[in-house]
Image (cartoon, rainbow, N blue to C red; front, top):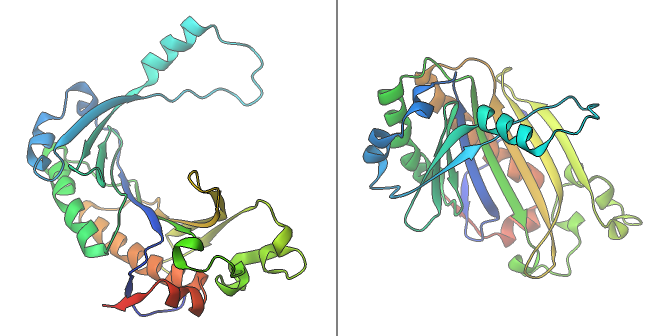
Length: 264
């Protein structure tokens, strides 16, 4: 606990829109100083496509009232930016991002954890071999589920028959639920290892194509304490197991069955 144990399954109708793993480390300036040609060469079989962009981060006091001239703003942006190197698979479903402070893997068509780890291992080992980060300052694993009732053949079913009451809030009210046009809830829940947190955000999202309102469950598991290089994968495995428990805790048996679970 938190989140009760549940059998591990793969859903034939998968509601996962995206899965992102990010590992942050103390700044390694050589990543910015030269193009990571050796890093690319080692992961190119799985991630043959390459692009590069400049991250810009400018922070001003929230009460600042002075307007910054555009030429000065451009100078500030140029001086504070960092390179973000992107390597993607041929079909674009898998993306590695590398900067001087983090490496990440994004999956746009997530199927199972073993496949995800298989895509992550080589880039992670390559990072350690070439750049030797001393440790990870943050380890994170984020699951973004978007539940579309039409995709599940449940168009006319109320949300309170598909989602657990503790995740529904006001939407679960028989009198008010059908009148809710928009909402967002956010919780930070401490995990049982006493050092990790899951930031849980739920909200309606509108489909660009159909205009249908879907229900998004965004669960961001992270540990911001110092993690050794060798312990990072154990932390990610822990987050994955809790992620499976969390989504089962959020949904009812009816939705679980509609997603067509297959036992592993």
